[in-house]
Amino acid sequence: MLNSPGGRIQPVVDWLDDVLNRDRSGYDLNLDCRSEPSSFVDDLLGDQDGAVVLMDAGTGAILSLASCWPYDLNRSLHRQ
Image 1 (cartoon, rainbow, N blue to C red):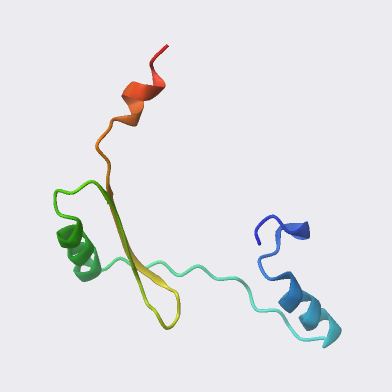
Image 2 (cartoon, rainbow, N blue to C red; image 1 turned 90 degrees about the vertical axis):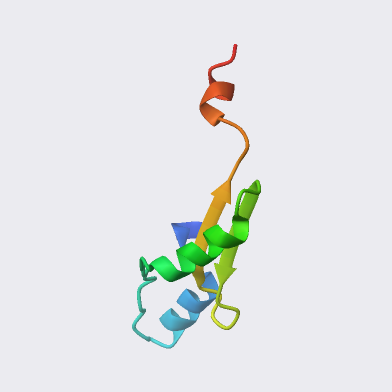
């Protein structure tokens, strides 16, 4: 819920932390660059138009993304 008051992602958890006087851990973003997952999703997509998202089913972590679209967005933006 990115649009919640205060821009908090988990307002209920934040409220509970306040009630129980618990320290809040931050909302960390961990980035990693590994060639194996990227190569895998690129191979899955091949020459097809579309997108592939490789996720860890247990944690919901996004392992890799790939996309290929058949149009040039720059050309469509400059039409009048």
